[in-house]
Length: 294
Image (cartoon, rainbow, N blue to C red; front, side, top):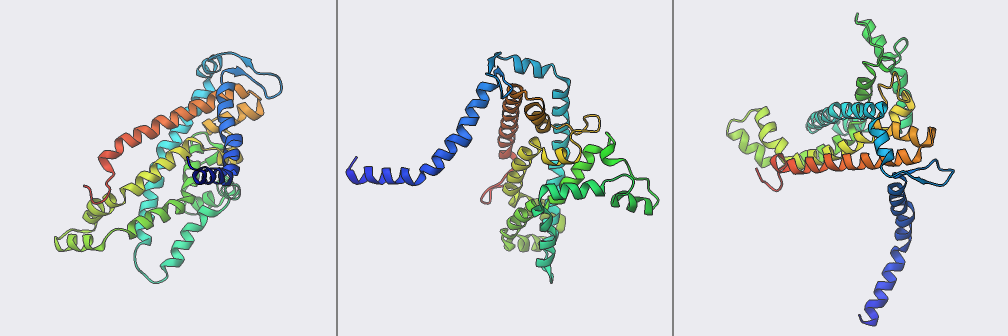
């Protein structure tokens, strides 16, 4: 290498060194240490004691471990599709050119920027079975409201409904995808006699399928790591009906100080998310269309 090339390389490394140091200390090192701790009995105080695959064997025999997986899969199976459907439907409505549409878009987007803790406390009040606004409205029309967060049968559906509160974030992305569709395609379909639902099925959905694919991946990753709302509102109850995987991982790490067990859970979660993501990527060739492909 010439002296100028070496100097440019040195200067470049100096400029990126703060990020490299931060990445090595706060990301790469914890990543590698968690892999080591997953094979040890570690409580964050005493020295790690090597147990091999003992943590994984213990987890596979833990009833709460499997229940947390079932709760997480339940939430993912309903929350992610509902979020996509509601986001696309809302984007279609907000893509209509009428007066004051900017105001409507802002109103629907605002909930997505409300802090999670604040919105969780708000929904905790709304879901109150005796004094909450939702059951009060149901009682006003002669319907008996459910127990919501205090009923094991309704606790997860309540959190799913709460998740739709922030659908405005994905709605903005869908709206951007809708506005990128050439209007000539709709005009040609109109000339050919296509009705509105033909346009949605054969033009709109295929053209925004890359956006749907992106939100699907992000929604799956986020739902498998669902934690904050369940921790604030229910702490896993009632009867462990909202004990999601990340919440159980947190309890093992910071309530029971089973750091080795929590590290093993983190790696299982990593592999599970990786497997689901790869599966969705493999299936995307059948329903995601790019650059006019059909």
